[in-house]
Length: 72
Image (cartoon, rainbow, N blue to C red):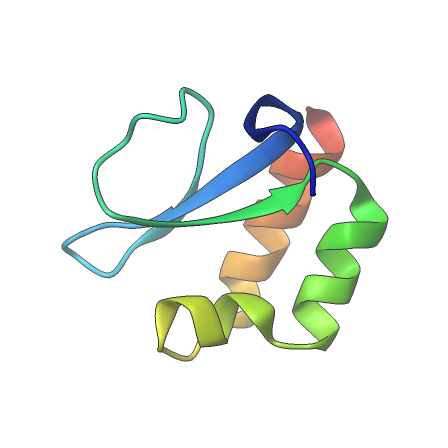
């Protein structure tokens, strides 16, 4: 278990768009992962985000999230 401030929030909004929530306050269903690239790759491999959001996630979305995580 980690403190919420040490985690990165990923959000699915009403339009089914998935994005990184920098503020932690964006509306929509959220899922948390740690801010490391290793955690993100594990989440992709184990389809953790797909299970959390109950939908298939396109590879382009994963690439966009990967860029956001690496830059933060």
